[in-house]
Image (cartoon, rainbow, N blue to C red; front, side, top):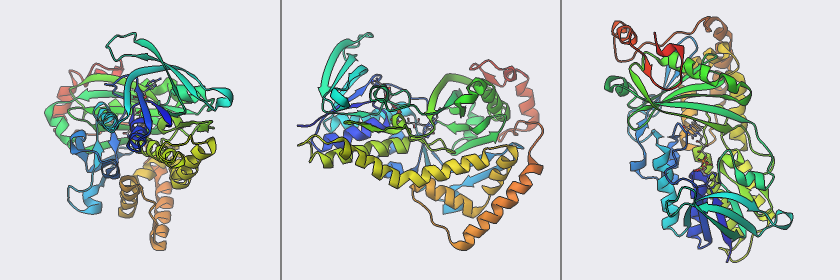
Length: 446
Ligand SMILES: Cc1cc2nc3c(=O)[nH]c(=O)nc-3n(C[C@H](O)[C@H](O)[C@H](O)COP(=O)(O)OP(=O)(O)OC[C@H]3O[C@@H](n4cnc5c(N)ncnc54)[C@H](O)[C@@H]3O)c2cc1C
């Protein structure tokens, strides 16, 4: 009987382990920290809820408005109400990763995967990397912080261990470029929080990120405020976070930072994602999209697709699949999502280039066809074909916006107005402080 170890109990690992266990394959799922709260915005597309059978209980908030805010503070509501009409059927789910990850991991375990609370510390890959694979790990099952040293030998490995993947190193998968993301969780007064009830914000501008965007995403009882930038600009990250805080300070007034977190985000797939009988999935493979920085759905989906290939090639665990069999998963993956990644990379290169382009981007988001296209492709992960007239209109709109964008780009960045209080009241509140705690920035004091 085939023996498979899945290293990493995030969405990619749990979804892989679930499929393997369901097929009756002997599966071990390793997670170093069972209450791990992966630093993450936690936004998931609607299709993921159905496709991965996620219960309502793991969704903290159902966002129906994505507000884009340009460098000059032009605000455009990309609204599900506008695109699909008022209903509760469509939404962007906002989740706490500790809740969602625990649910998916426990489900895999209930279906028969052996869940090990352990940190895999070394991997021997066998002759020519072909296995069997000998894992050494610290087992924390008994609550001991140092853990008990143990070993396990398996026929096949799935590396679902995120951006700092140990499996990727063991199989010499090669490096990828990463972006660095920084996030503060901020508890807001009731009035301020009510504005973010079903609304998330994305800020663009050189002040918040030279190559990405800043965000305010609602969570269970607080907001996640963050930004990301490419590794070469890593030294700027705290200043960029200060930029997001500054722009949003009237909406985050009297907030209190409850957590500060940072984590790398892969920018493209690794040079090798399958070596011998080892396969990478999710962030370990490098499956986060450009422009949107979305990775949860793609992690879950890649874990599932990789495991399905293993089930099929092994005839439900009767034979050991070959490297060639595992590479079929890559072929299918690249065929299904290659275009999506390419299109989002092109969009990032065009629209996040400078403030003129960012102004153009936000202006374009006000168009109904652009909103429909954005939501159809994000929420349902389907490639949307456009009618020729629609295509022509969007092309003209892009050109027009890009020309106008130059005139709109600001010389100085200003905070957006509060959405729930008169300006006078907010100014008064800001005399004390804007945000308590978190990174040390001048702007916390006015
Ligand atoms: C700040 C930030 C905001 C983001 N916001 C969003 C968002 O809003 N929406 C979205 O779709 N994506 C977002 N992403 C991307 C998303 O978080 C990732 O794409 C996703 O978590 C990838 O899932 P994964 O299962 O591949 O890896 P991870 O979620 O990183 O899971 C890896 C797991 O492996 C475990 N592990 C690692 N090494 C070992 C080991 N040696 N032994 C045992 N266990 C190990 C870790 O504890 C972890 O639980 C964001 C990322 C960041 C950094």
